[in-house]
Image (cartoon, rainbow, N blue to C red):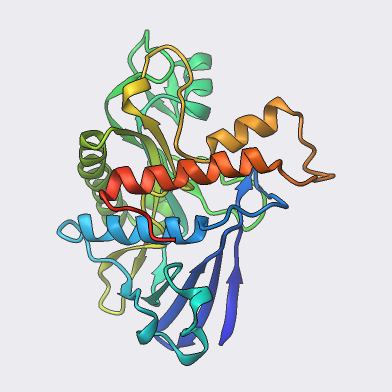
Length: 284
């Protein structure tokens, strides 16, 4: 199979003219650096959480999945190492934007708000506190940088990139998907503070949800039982790993292995999020 992309976490193979195979590795990245230590089973957790969410929102928008059963994969991928961590998907014309949606004010959004009362150019009410729920979710898209950081862009810039009608549809679907999934997650004890989606266009010109959906790598998951406005929150996502790296002044230019206890805690957080959301025991 021809490998056409190797990202921070995912490997993408071209199966034929209209199909791809996505393989989710156990790699973990933070601050745009792939860490030297893998998180065992992480790829399987991410892949299966995405599959779960694709099913939850299929009434809102079609998705790119053809099959997650290795028996349907090309012969090269019909082995244990690919089981549970791979998807056979439709090839799409991907949109050149990351569709970020924020339901709570945190992270870079909180930093920007403290400066001028806005997040990505959107004026927000005065007096908000860190981690507070926003009056309504906001759409804050970014570019897709091939290298370095994605850049925030305005909705008008999205319209220039992909056209006004498609931009409006993407914004509407992004907020609709987030709203449905955030309400569901809250019923399971998880607050989804923010997330990002990616969309593509299929052979019929239809908008399709693709890549990953509401995983701990693409979202901020907070335990609802510990939620408290006015401070940063505990999390199920890789924020735990980011916090550890910041606290220890870990040097990305001279990376050292991550201690086993930090790896195991991170792994346990991913698995706990999967089990809370799906109601299933994670199968190793």
